Length: 80
Image (cartoon, rainbow, N blue to C red; front, side, top):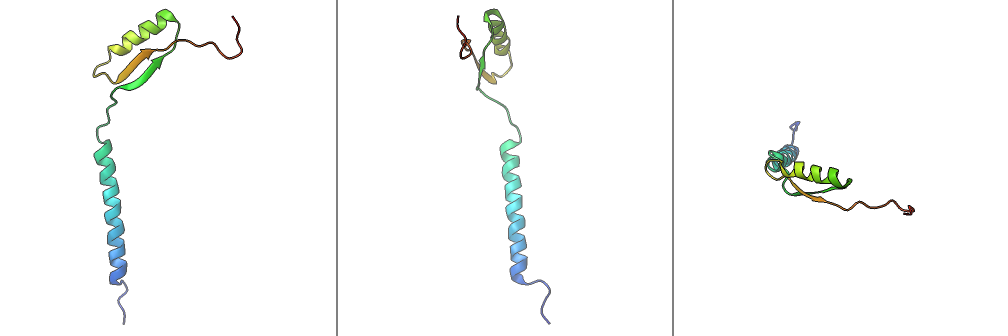
């Protein structure tokens, strides 16, 4: 009588489990301590408000944002 589980099926299951463990390990290794660094961040607001916002963002510890004040654009079709 044949065995219920063949060697080929056992190796296939072990291989799949090993791939799953490697996949999990790669995610844990890459994302275990995510910290943003120098993320570009533009502030578009009226004059004083934009300057205040940029000043507050500059005070964040660890410089996670690369902040800059962007010029305000007029909406399309507006005339002045």
